[in-house]
Length: 219
Length: 219
Image 1 (cartoon, each protein chain N blue to C red):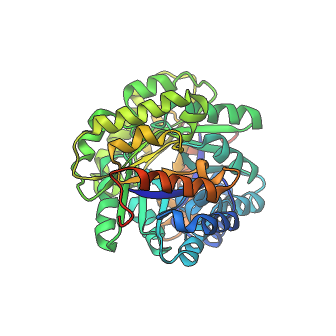
Image 2: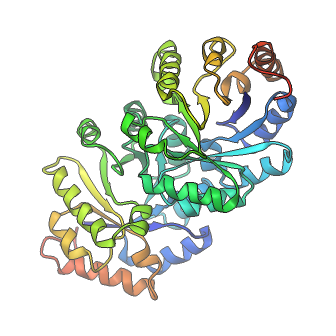
């Protein structure tokens, strides 16, 4: 079970400093959509260069223009790029082709997808599926309801061949309810980045995962 | 009937040069999603500064984090910003609030929305609705089918209180089928930007609109 650190709503330098602090406790580093839209591919290039040992995720949230956008972020150094599952299927299809072409990965964000869309998307066996409660849903909705819907959506996704990532307000508090579902990737943003002491937050989350019987330190 | 020039898949300097060439023939200038993701808000700031008399559209394609993203692009100088109609309603709602707060406009992109979603979105009377066949749909699909679906979707949207924009492979050739539906904004990209002589393409489109009985030169 990997920890993906989501870096959002900050400058590139702040992102570098934050990732540096928690470096031993996270596996993947996500350049958030807000950083990409604010600073462009420079944000991906800097994180790539400064963290050569980490898997870099570009949260592109592609909805169209798939080949161009994926070419752009893979070339900037991303190992994984995201596409919206709510986009036309031809767009997701093109992203999958780009992943294969570049020998890199595609994460399909299931935010606000219908059951029919998720069924269609399940054909992509090589994709990582991101079960996601959005920032806006968290901020304007009930926090507990968000955690519940994350859990129920994960269950609904059921038995799977694909890798599953979970995102949306995940914290040390919500982990006990989520970890038993055995997601492959936990995407954690503000629970680390907005913590009083980010390194303490990150190490506590890591320790919790170690203490969980299903997760070994070798993983 | 306004012409919105969509600038995509190019550098900021190329975008400035292109917009400069066709300046008298277009009304609005769109900083395309690909430019935003490649160069960040710098792309919006530069176009804003170089074209103070034009309405600047930031094609943010927001799907989450609405307040932050809209604050970002309105502050960079955008007059209009786009949100995906396929996003959670709370996200669209937040974009509308940001528009009101800043005294700026919101364009809701109807790409890959369901009929139920469009019905829900029609509550936003102040929004501009963008009927959109995507680049990927155009490139991987049948060009004629794209034009047809644009036309039928526009018809389906029916009588309206909101402003309507049309986007997706619009060219001088497809205009005669689209103009009778009386859209408020025609979003035109490659038919101008990829033309052998962009200024000729833009002026021909403008002349066609002038020649159309429903469009006056004063508009």
